[in-house]
Image (cartoon, rainbow, N blue to C red):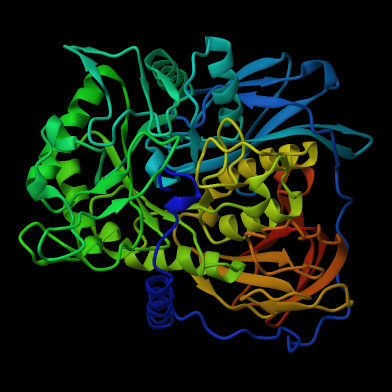
Length: 607
């Protein structure tokens, strides 16, 4: 995200429109989206659709873990509000729908040894049984992964005034409850070309950022330390090609600058007025001189601050540009060599580069960047666009790098104080998560604007509660959501008229079905657009409405073999806990009842 208020948005709508046409063609050719299909022609339904046992009561008791992610075989420490549990409470640990182990809950804090298998998600369910009726009191996801880049869940911090330990830890504790495993330190630095000011060999204790805010070294340091305590990675933010006024006095060569003409008369720059301290002048990322200059600056940063890597930013398509020697410059083609140079100099540090409106993503995906990050701007405005961006990134990286989307929901509302519209956020997250992405949105506040310190919009309590469940779900089922597989179309219909189902892409008035084959599992995501007011994920004016809950919809699915099990889970119900569903199979026709659908439910058919 550009290190600027709204003026940092991509400048060339023409480029973005032509890019979208290119990406659309690439998508059709490389992943085969297929056409939207009605599911009304399913195989004949068996006469009897078996009922399920009742949905367990859900207590929503507060529960937490001590880290955002865990190394295989390490101890996971849980803390629960023990006063709200019955004496016979137990905890079970589930991988997908399979119980791994179970134990009694006898105190507010206990530990569980994470299994030895790397890169797996689990759900811990605290429950009790009375008179053959189960109650689920609390649930929480557990990510057992040795490296965060496999399943990145990115958050941010953006304000660095003088803060005490309690203020810092309040922010990171909340991020930990959402399992955020990497934090982008937005605009923590001083000059873009000289991020950490020094007093001789000692870092300055305070400095100004570009908008004239006071930044305190010890606050940055405290945030890094607190993040590490939760096993989160700390990423230092900066543009890959930014310089302030008079940068030549700091050793930046005029031969590294980008020009708008081939006579090197006019430098390319982003104009900024008061209260900004400088314009931002662009440098050529393919220049080895500039690469080494910024690498040396980063070395000073890493010597003083224990950052884990470099979150790189850009300003999108800048139109026609030239190098100092008068030759044409294709900025998008410079990203790959810049990333690779940075990684080569600091191989133990992570690197990620923002593809602004997908600009330059092909080279980024081919580079040594650790995962892919897209800041979503128009014309990528619909839920279908979000899905397509994630699929494009999968294709460009040969399914080796997962995606984080910086997508600013309720953007226009963020110009004034107010509240997020809960359905806008949850519908967007349902789409992003179902297609295997994650959403950069959580920091000191929730994000609605590319200038991260903007905290005009706040979350209502219902959204706060739901966000915990959605992030638990993202972690618990990450091996179905973000760990390979092939998207496909399924034949699924409701036989009791409770919902109209159509294969993705989404459309208002229907429940969208997203199929994905993961190993021997057929995953079916159902996202409820039945009474949606808009297909625009940004929902600038907050008009999206909460879907009406659909209960006990009898469904028929056309299977490709003998079905062993059918189960479902939803972040909207019982804390994301999975439930086995009774089913009948008659030939290739499988019938079952889906207990609930509000925003998003996931059905898994095991062969």
